[in-house]
Length: 448
Picture 1 (cartoon, rainbow, N blue to C red):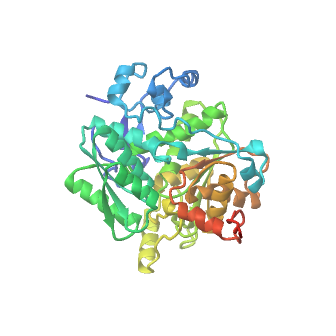
Picture 2: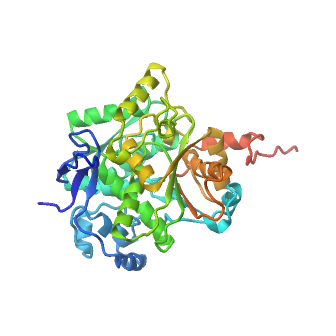
Picture 3: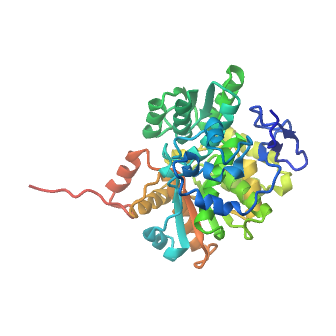
């Protein structure tokens, strides 16, 4: 079958196209690939998306991913046919993205010095496996199903393995997950086991686990569902669609994400570029990426802290030699990523070049925050009655930092994405047991 959607090299000077009926993720020139569609979607679909919220028993209307299926219809399914959608589209009974939308959180707004109406946070921890990964996994496993693969493979700091294992078990696939030994939250590791994955522990960090997983998947067979897979990026675009829908498709001034492997930043940029190109939005939000100080590759390179040279997209003419020299310098000086926010403890972001494109398109900023800042951010979200993991605490921490620098203005609308829920209770316990922490609620000792 000939599919109209194509995989296209993101390097403008290359632009090679590939069919989607294979698992090629990287162009022969070395750059990653985008999914490209032949048609411009009609903006009248906005009303259809809204009507689908009354899903009427159709799980694909209930799904926060497949509700927007015309905008990621890479397999040319008849989007109005429940029978066809059921045959081709992968969903956990409509639960991915279903409860994910922006919320006001008054205590966080006060923490970052913004009016309550100007700050919205979108908790992706409401996804079935507890993180944003389910958005992309629904699309990636749909593509895997199309290729009739038998096993999916990923490297993970935890959330990817949980999501991959959940979708694999539901679809009857085998699932191998490569994890850095001792560097994964117990709650996330427990999910991988619970959903029947084969866990392979790697001596090293996430970057080592990813390298090994790609090598063995190539040799032994297996479909990789890490975010270098462009279909993962397609599913994660729906995070932006839900933000826009909540705001009646009037873009905010800022969209804020934690920065790890940078797949979310890449999907955000692709979604915004497409919506702007289609004429669906007239304003481009600025994107803020927040690194942990202990895992700040993107921060260092974008802000010119290595060799006094700022890494830029530069219309696709990326100085990849600078990236290579940075990684070599890290290796020679035995510098490894280290933060308690293990979800973003990544030294070699797989999507760094796509993320550069996002930063250029949105006039974005990359900031860094300390671990204690992320813990404060996590705690203040919790005091609003919402749950997020430590990595997501980087979002309010990063917003506050830009407010202090007056880069985010008090009258601007800011939407932050809380990428996952808390799966390592020891972090919250550790934080609240210490009376010195800003928002701690230590237990009271009662004397009989």
